[in-house]
Image (cartoon, rainbow, N blue to C red):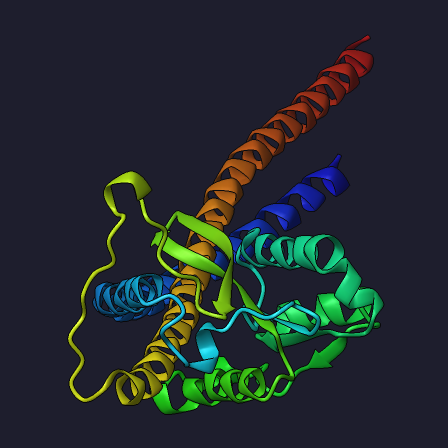
Length: 298
């Protein structure tokens, strides 16, 4: 019985130690989440407004814009940017993004994959570690795996600029991005969106929108679009990265909070088992003492 008590005591100590770790990780993630959340909430309205403006202009000037980023080509060569985290312990956060990428690779772009015309570009180690083994027949680009070590605009824009350069020269006919959109600390929505070519803004009610908007450009439209569209694309890509960064810390904070709660419940159950075992041991010892005394008196 003493061996059983010792085993339960050791398990209780182990769970207490684990709970201290999960509490500390929750506090660290909460601190990082606060900073990451501030970054994305400050940037999102600006980025969304720019994106909407760009797509609205493209929709209204369909056919009149010569920018290479709005030209729709047959998607013979495709690139998918998979944005995950570098570390785990964040629930199903990375798994959900990876699932979105798998749907793209094995479904929509299965033909491009079969023809060796599908590239996977990784930001974050978790997606890279999983998908490089699953899709060895795709072109794997891991140059930007450690992008999260420096989230400055200058560093992030290196990736978006590379994508735009390759799209311009025809190395890629379409670029998609798989990432997670931040809603709040407990809710992250995995997304798979088309980055290039630019998707025009859909007209809600075509019957009421027969005429195109009449834009006045200063300087002329070609010069403005050549500067405006690449800049907005870079801002949009930065939003993808910052969204994912906030989602990671939100998911990890939630996961560590759940782990702490589970550890607390497990300790309660272990303490009940420990007390039961202790009572059994005391009862057995008393029975042996009473039995021994009775034998001596008999």
